[in-house]
Length: 454
Image (cartoon, rainbow, N blue to C red):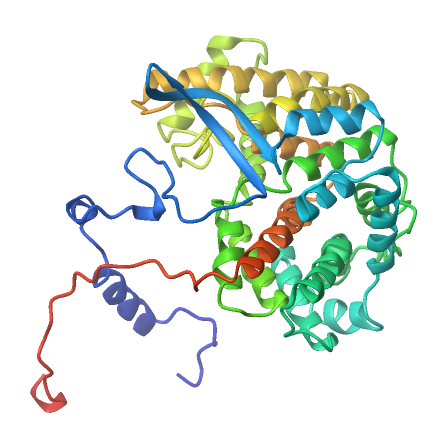
């Protein structure tokens, strides 16, 4: 073993891995036999009720003649429809991230005075400990920005004299600091990676106190710090739409689970980041962008419904792209007729595409969004409708904004940290029992055999 690299998969590891995998595979029929809600969902995909929350609600059903049937999707933050919230701050020509973060945390829409004080507080916290960038980000650059983000969050524990204090005032202080600095941690991590691994010039811009979260993201990322108002406003809307999505989404549920143990804020948020990093959760928009690039390479006429539908059929039948059998950006665990975030986002995406001279690409996206659900419905039996989800357009927006793919999921985290913070405070405030679902053991009992008789 002495001559082998520590990260090499040796024949011994392969043999043990096959044994470990074979010994843990569970007959799928047993989930039905024992009425196990696999993935905390029933056979129809409906989530098991595991908690209560004030913070947000996802609704995609209605009662007709005493029966539950699919409905147009709605998302509520603290009881307010997300459509009304976005309409409100966009009509006022304001940035919404700070205002809606205030709503999620404090269960009220702020007055002008409260919003200014809150923005000033976030601006005050928008700084990192002395030498943190040099010592914690620059010295260990990574190709994965979610790992950089999680590592940075855990490192901040060492800089906090009250790191283990889980009283609500202290946790709120910690959460506000993390909300304020997530864009910095994400962008600085990317700049370090690009410099040390790609050989590009290193740009480290300091955040500007007078700028919103969306404006600061673009300011920090771009070498010249320049951006248009439309670019910043659309990025702001993207942040608002991704801030929360009920207590049952994987990363938010992780926040509740880990917070229920009484652990510190940095450990809880790092765990949530680990959840969000998973491609089934936070990485879907990257897959959409790559899939659409593949479609553009193989479809000649972007206006030909038959040609586009035929290629989507190839995707479904594992004959094209990554041969996964998926049309990325189509379908959702909850929504079946429409994802309200996609409905809101679509019109703003079109405006940005016009500004960027990419209307033809937007038209292709719109065609795939229209035809994709029809192709899926015709090819596969499904228990509910399939709709285009917010991930379908978000990657296209980030690409138009010049954001690198490495920052797509960290950008999701920069939004979702507001929701995680509200849910962590909710879990700690209610001081419930540690979250511990049951697992049924199906391994038969065995008698111990001495090692020389095995």
